[in-house]
Length: 281
Image 1 (tube, rainbow, N blue to C red):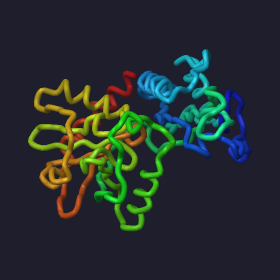
Image 2: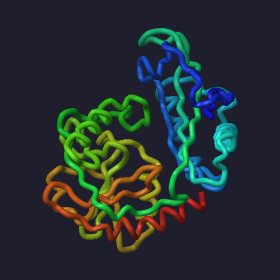
Image 3: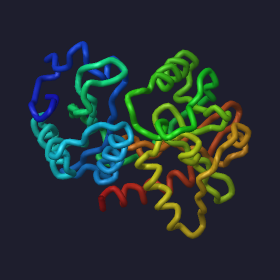
């Protein structure tokens, strides 16, 4: 079942028309989150990021769009899909209502909530091979729109096709200054001699929820230091570790970039702390 503006529809039913602005113009935002045992991991962070993003895109925030209202709609959708006892991937999509061309006729919005089961209730480390390559065909812009989780993800789609065609598990995306900013589906962290680096928001990376949580965690660890700073492609092969973060996977260590092989000691140590933080909300 899919929740469209509070009404539940089967996944086979048609609910969006040909004039949907998310389809025609990418005029949409989305949040993906984990739901486990009645709890949406880091829900407040997801909610406030969504509200801030809607303001930046000049979408009208409905009066009923409180944290509690959207949380209950997510829980109701999970329940109607008989997934209350499962780990669940939740996607909440917000789009401006139909009408207009580039200039919309309204700033009012609609929402869709869809859910699907996950294998594990908590984040786990994938110890398998995970190889990445630099994607150099197109670039991430260094601006605030790049920080938002919008449906304008054609660069990520093309990079995904490139990765699949060439046998890579993921691609590193670079900005217009040729600095590494993120991967196709999340943020990037680099570890070298106890220093953990992640690109700054000014570089154009996604303002990721797990990125934010890991920065908080690392800040509390005495033998690690975290900085938000540009990462040059030349630094990649000198690093001890590279890992990816997002709200569904948590932490994904990178095992190989070109001829360089990486450890996962720090990423593995951070995973338990991330799971503990998720349980606390």
